[in-house]
Length: 180
Image (cartoon, rainbow, N blue to C red; front, side, top):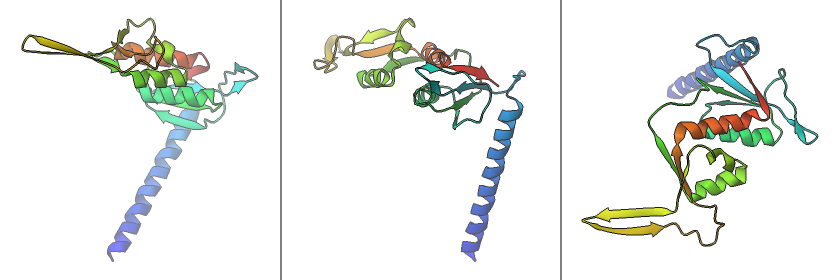
């Protein structure tokens, strides 16, 4: 008797999920040409063609990413470079305006290099960070990052979060179009 309840609930939730995905796909197709106030904005990537990038306004996406923040933009860029057609859906594609800083550790900067996104920290007033300084009772000590085996450019970066996110989104637009 209890198992029947769980089976029914799983079936109902699966059916609801299918209906929501079906409606999202229909909405993306219907709203592709217009972006009325209050609607979500989308970024669409297109596969690379013969060493260049082709911009398309039609076709179904291979992948839909909800969220155009750091993770969504990085994933969309990577998949777009890999030749996949990606839709990125976000509430608002303007620069986030909130009081928050960001500290990207050296390992994170190395990952940006690996993804081809290292130029996203340029021209946003990012500061290189080479370690930590500790202060207590008038004494201080420095704890540098162990960067001896890396190039001179590898270090941490401190920057404004919103500028970094915008740079990542701008990087996406070099090979894609913005649609609704």
